Image 1 (cartoon, rainbow, N blue to C red):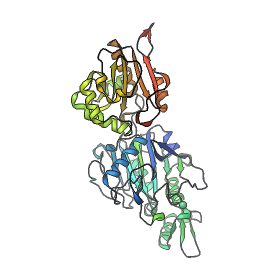
Image 2 (cartoon, rainbow, N blue to C red; image 1 turned 90 degrees about the vertical axis):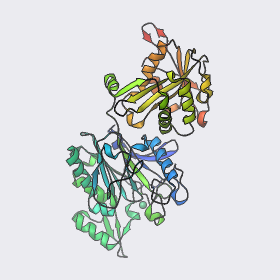
Image 3 (cartoon, rainbow, N blue to C red; image 1 turned 60 degrees about the horizontal axis):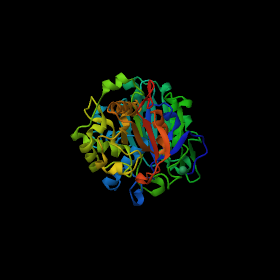
Image 4 (cartoon, protein in one colour; image 1 turned 120 degrees about the vertical axis):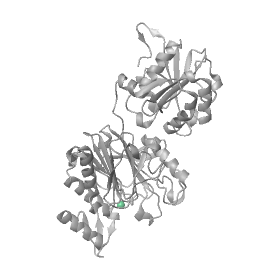
Length: 465
Ligand SMILES: [Zn+2]
């Protein structure tokens, strides 16, 4: 990856084969999930290869949907919660509410000319699209609100960054000095030649700030324009503090193998996307979780929901199929514990296992519900799933704690599970012990086997959550 010579706390991450950029200053708020896609890790082909996130650039719809699902698994959101922009190079900013959930993805857009979006609804995933134009991210940690905008040269001259902040002020009381902001991967000055009329528009709007560093004239009468600097100028003038602003050092056009660039490809390209979502309220009390969720066994009619959640939470090679989930639910509903959102009546997450007399985990437990032995004293944990929009509140821990209590009450002795290395710490916090690398090769991955004894030792259960 070619980087421009300037400091940036933007980082390239990868999750499940899907690379994406994040900004440290946004992540450090602890209030959002966010990212900026690359062109890698998707299923699209040809000049759209491979992570095209546009339905309108000639791609197969099924490919684009699979790409969104992959981005969702990597960054941590459910595609059903996406809200898409309708970009036409305006400075129009729209307040997105619960009503807008899914628009542009699961249902049609019923708005037009939206280049900026703001919201204070947790779990709503704002998504906007780019291939050289400038992504602008905003987080107001005081009022727990976010904004995401698309700033091409027209949007930059119209100061859509400032328009987004104004809209946040009107809707949420946002003060610019509180806001954390970021300018994402887009075209750099060296790659961005513009004509006289564009240059004139910038000189008119920015006055003396449109100096040689923002815009310089070349011998051929054309100009090189720095959209990063111009947007930085817009945001600083609007009251964002320099220490709260991160600017990319990665150019879309300098990195055509990594990113889609309109200039580099003369328009034969897919779309990149910026994603920004407010997470929940942060860890909440047991009482609050009880108010929000009903915990109980699964109902036969909920097997499809459980399979859908599994599909959102795990990549295809690891996820339980719908057919298998239905078998498990039919065979051993009492080995499921689901958390039902009392507001929606839908599952927010679940934990499921199979009891057995066997003492070592093997992959057949994933695929053969007939291994269920109601009398077994061990429980093989097959999945702990929490939908992305419900994460960060302690719901996974609450599911495990209740499950442990329930199964101990039935006389079970031990819980066993396998997990990826990256989840070992999380399960240790829940009271599990790492038994090392297991014999399992489920999904072609390496797994750790972990267990947790349920018998009481003195006053305190060993598996203490
Ligand atoms: Zn460049």
